[in-house]
Image (spheres, rainbow, N blue to C red):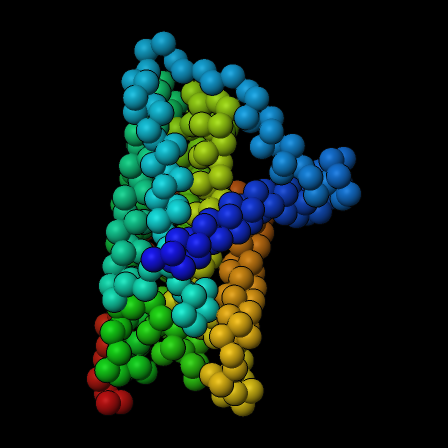
Length: 336
C-alpha cells in the first residue's frame, strides 16, 4: 500500500512537471515553425517560463460571473484534473511499474475517456455564457462521435493481443504490451492506429479538432469565464491528457515499455532498477514523440469546419473502423 502511494505521488509529480514543460515545448516548436524566437527571457533559454506562468496564475484574481452556478463552476476544473490523474494510474511505465494493474485496464481507460466530457460540459453550462455553453456542447458532440470509432479500433487491438499472447488476460494493458514482443501492432494494424490517433486529437480537443475552444469563434469556448488557477487547472489538464493519450497510443500500438532487441540483450534477466530505467526510458521516449506529433499537427493544419468534423467521425471513421475490425478478425481466424 505504501509503495503504491509513493509511486502514485512520483507519477503525479513527473506528469505535472511534464505537462508544464510541454507548454514551453509547444511554444518553442511553434516559434521555430513561424520563424520567431519564442519564450527566451525567463531563465536560460526561457526554461523558467512555466514556473513564471504558474506563479502568475496563482496571483490572478478568481472571478466568477454573477449569474453562474458557483458550485458547478468550481467543481468542473477539479473534475478535469482528477480524471486526468486517474487515467495516469492505469498506464504501465515499465515491467512491474504501474500504480493500478487492473485485469480490465483497457475498459477502465475507455471509461475515463468517456467521463472526461463532463468537466468541459459542466464548465460550459455553469458559466451561464453563450460562448462557454456552445463550447461545452461542441465538446460533448465530438467526444461522443469519436469514442465509437476509438472503441472499435481498441477491439481490434484486443483481438491481436488474444492471438499473439494466448492465455493471458487480454484486457490488461501489460498483456497488450507483452503481446507486441515480436512486432508492434502499428505494423499489423495501421488503419486502426490511424483511426485511434485522429480520434485522440478529437478526444483531447487538439487542433484541428479544437472546437470546444475555437478562439476565432467562441472567444475561448468552455473556459471563457474562468480565471486564475481555475483556468490553470483546465490548462494543466489539457496537457496531461496530451501525455495520457500519447501513453495510451504507445501502449496499444508501439510496444509500450518494450524496446528493441530485448531478447538479444537479455533484459528479462536484468535487476529491477535496470529494467525499470529501460522501460521508463522507452515509454517516455515513444510518448514524447507522439506529443511532438500532436504539437506539429496543431501548427500545421487549419481547423476543420464543424460539419467536416461530424462527417469524418460518422461517415468515414465509423465504417472504416468496423471494416478494419472485420478484416482483422477474418485474417486471424484463417491463420489459426
